[in-house]
Amino acid sequence: MAADAPTKITFFEFLTPLVASGKKTITIRDVSESHYQPGTQVEVYTLESHIKVCDILILSVEPLAFDDINEFHAAQESLPLDELKHLIQQVYPDQQCLFLISFSLIDAGISSNTNSTNYLVIQREFCAF
Ligand SMILES: CC(=O)Nc1ccn([C@H]2C[C@H](O)[C@@H](CO)O2)c(=O)n1
Image (cartoon, rainbow, N blue to C red):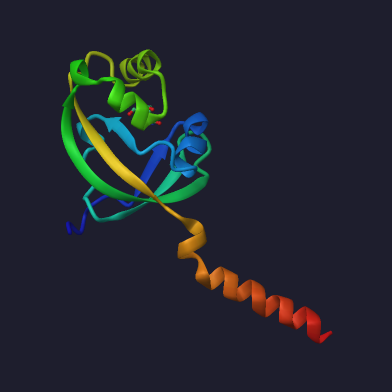
């Protein structure tokens, strides 16, 4: 695993519910955001307000030409294809060479056993009063 792999990614705020619910499982970025490493855990933040949303696991990073973006990608983005292509053209105007980053949601419920334990401890302390 590369030591300098990025550990944070931002999404437009309106897209973050799709990421946090596991409905959005890819993102298409330009070369400047293509250095994520498969197998690494990455924190997701909103672009506009920099609020932490969730954690994701990077599964793969592969080149993708703008002209090759299709319905399958749109389904994984949880967006209509025309909307997805319009959005990408706005963010990366005239860029043909893009990167497809696949990821899976790291379920906070499973990875936060510590929090559950803490909650139970607090409950017991309340009972003691
Ligand atoms: C800084 C930056 O570019 N942020 C981006 C870029 C793209 N997205 C979204 C828009 C589309 O849903 C996909 C494109 O793959 O990713 C974003 O949320 N933030």
